[in-house]
Image 1 (cartoon, one colour):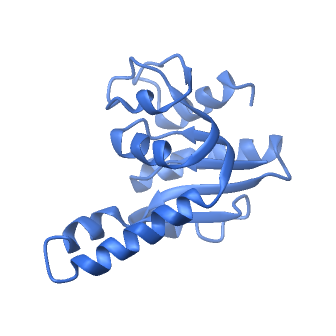
Image 2 (cartoon, rainbow, N blue to C red; image 1 turned 90 degrees about the vertical axis):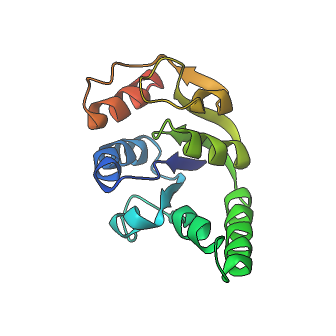
Length: 157
């Protein structure tokens, strides 16, 4: 089984999603688990024993480089990243971010089940449009760590 966790940023939010990673690993001990993260938070995940792969989006750097002489390099790197994202067919893609930027990447990823919170999460930027399975939205008053575990709980994990 191939599983993709999508929690791109921020550093604290990535840390708050680590218990969900450990819960997934416990339920799926032989799964190949990949985490899609932005460059700023990637060091937190590199070498984590529950992860098989860390896929790093350098979106902020690419956007900056598109403004200057390094634009060709930015395009090449972004294309290579998208190829790497699409190289694996995932059985399960979990959107812990619930933002437009995560939704777009989930849409580009190849996956059977694309799961996250449905319409109604306060800060959501229409990411639910890119999912094929939606868990009922939860109150943003719940801590980020708890929201992540609630997503898994709704899936029986």
